[in-house]
Length: 355
Image (cartoon, rainbow, N blue to C red; front, side, top):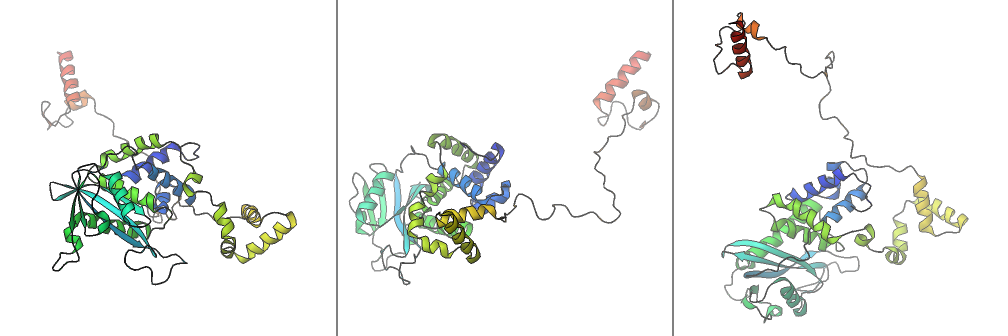
């Protein structure tokens, strides 16, 4: 929250929504929920909250742990259309997952991490960093998992004759992969390579606390104090080098009329074309999505001739004990349970005074 321009109430409201929403939410949905006019502010707020979903001192997995790897299709412009075959990282993003097995049938905590290539060195480092010694590791027959240091290993040959499918032998880790891919497509309509680690950590946070929503907000706020300050530049990185290497690609995405004015402006003032684009964009009347104001009212419009009455409900005047005693509501006995205790005491006091 350091140096934020958003009200503190919106910060806590956003933290509550993100922590307790079972499926998570995109920045566009969060923008409409808490009423922020800028999408960039909503995106930055959401990524700062995602940074507070990983405990630096969290405990490693133990007991019986299933480990396997999967991939998410992601083809760059330089990759071939057909993609890589087998375990090739071309045209895909490789993920490694691990999940604890509790009482032989139930899934406990889990870990999910993106790796560049699923070789022996990478997988053994993942096992060493995310599991405790003497843990029983259950994997498929991939040789990169063999002989993990200080850990037991049980491998299933899934390519053998009459072998069971992988989603039956390694039930829970494949269910995690399936839920993660469906969650990514349903909530975010796909993931990109740059920030996939953050989305993996968010999924791990939600999975490990799927039975304790009441503690999620406390955990997030507590971890936010541990990690300290997070800035926009720390999240997106330094884009100046990328912009210099892809200047032609960036200029092709600019509107031709705006680019023509920017070139003229840059020539007259002797400045860079990107600085000229920034100055022209500031001078233009930009269209902004006012998502904090609904386009139509929540309640329907009043009918013609219907008077608008905004007065609060006024209670009728209270009856005095003398009026009650003289016959008003005389069919209700003074000692009845329907009679208000306050009126009953008032009538009794009036009767004693008159006696």
